[in-house]
Image 1: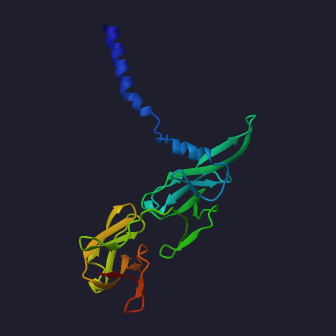
Image 2: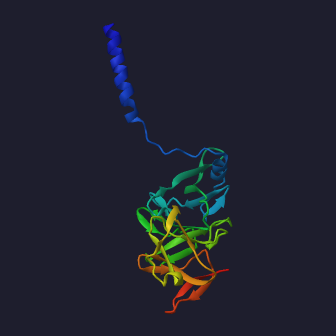
Image 3: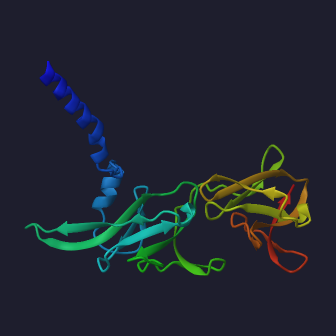
Length: 241
């Protein structure tokens, strides 16, 4: 009886302690599309889209490489993995870094930066670069396939739906001729990472407006219509019928 109690006590301690030694691993995608995309990577090149995934590659010329996206507010660094291709006799024919992520929903463009051995920079494999004047740094970008992107428009219920795509975690405001250019009346709500919306009632007419982050005004990229404010600034324009 005493031996049984000792066994149960030892077993109980092992059972209670063993989870502490479990390795905390990030779950790996296990889908046909992911495996198909992974098997299709043969060499380093420009980022591309395949089977619903965006594929990034880099040469093995650094100790580590990561990537951070604008729609996550650059708060998280995703690290590339090493891939080796083998010949018929088991020899390594090529090796490179890669990172695969699902195509974000309701976005027309991904802006990002890579981190090579701790240094933040643009993607050397991507010639598409845009300069962020506010933050004073360059971003690499990849345009996504044409999908239904939420845009600024008049709704059937009489409200006007304003949409702003920006970095996540911001406080985005709306101001225009309908507020006498007071940008502190309407603050937009972030409904998804990097997407801000607000619905306001507007009577028929033509209105000029801008989005604001802090004291910086910027255009509505979902609305190509432009105009000029009284002080000569280029602003967005919308006509409600």
